[in-house]
Length: 429
Ligand code: 4AD
Image (cartoon, rainbow, N blue to C red; front, side, top):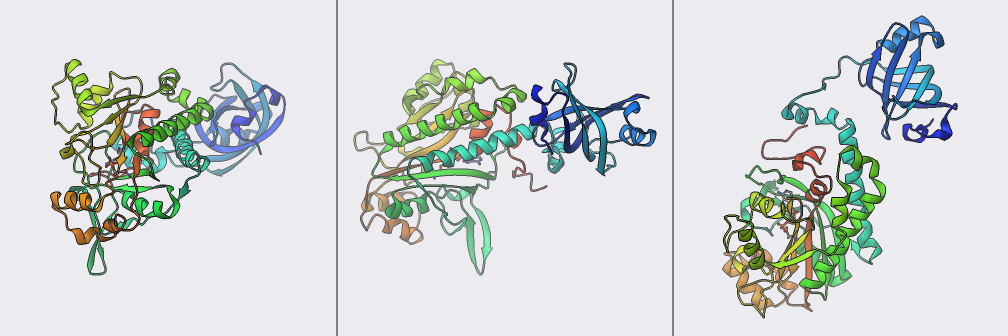
């Protein structure tokens, strides 16, 4: 059995092969029947000729419907007119299932396609998206394994918030209330006291009431935490990691990027050094671009889109004012009122894909910030313990893998790059 991609090759011309897959398109006349077949790897035009088959078989082929499953044996020819440049002349075939009408046809609305995502993921576009996504996830972990990190496995059901109470999902938990994790950061911080360099890839949950092109309620979060380093070193690591991922995609997914019409040279730009600006510098730039944004604004999806449309490489934004970020970020001893953190904003209008920075490692400082945030110390007893026993400087980050996918594939909405998106309005399929 061959795969379709394998036989789209001059070495197969004249050879007899066998493929299996699904009907992608079909059209027939009285003596010829063209069936474009697809498998996981690609599509190929196959042709059934009345002269090669008996009448009953020819009829059976001609009546095939979209997404019917079958096996075909035949010989490969070059044909410039065919969808992928080759044609398989059918000698024999076996039908596994002849479908009723497949519900998805051309020009169907967005909501219909979302309701039928379980079927739509078979489309060529989604097949390409899933392949690139798979490379991105693999490359993320690969980068950290190659650099001596350990993968760790924090819990998803937790008792504390990391990113504020407003986006917590509550789950009944044997008489208590548990939350679905917003971020594994605090657990990763516990692991560094054992392993020093750790990462994890797991879902995070945000009960986001806002409906934007970049928010999911369940998203894939790739997080890392590193002992003995500060904000700048953390950004260096993230920059190298993002470049590694882009290189892997460029190396492994040319065919898929082409199918999505992704401009390769735009991606290659991000292999150059990233920009680094402070929050104040970014706000100034935004004003120079003529945007109605002022110092102190917390930038959302629309503001970041308007700013990042002007950049062709990612931008690290550092030194946010203390009020704009959560309690665990370390204030900058050199710049009172500012914190040693960063966001990484993706170019071409995509905006924030990473949030990270240095963590407070002094017990007193953390206590003060917890109080200021109106949180209860006892809820964070284990997090505070890390500052009591052998505390060290450390930094970490959280990368929204779905957002990275969205930018790398240059799609319009985050729902376009995850098979089964969860949003405020969608829990099925
Ligand atoms: O900026 P955030 O909230 O930072 C944290 O959760 C840190 N505790 C991470 C850490 O340092 N370990 O989230 C990190 C990233 C964002 O930059 C964004 O890419 C993604 O997670 N993200 C979302 N992606 C999709 N849908 C949402 N609702 C998201 N919320 C955050």
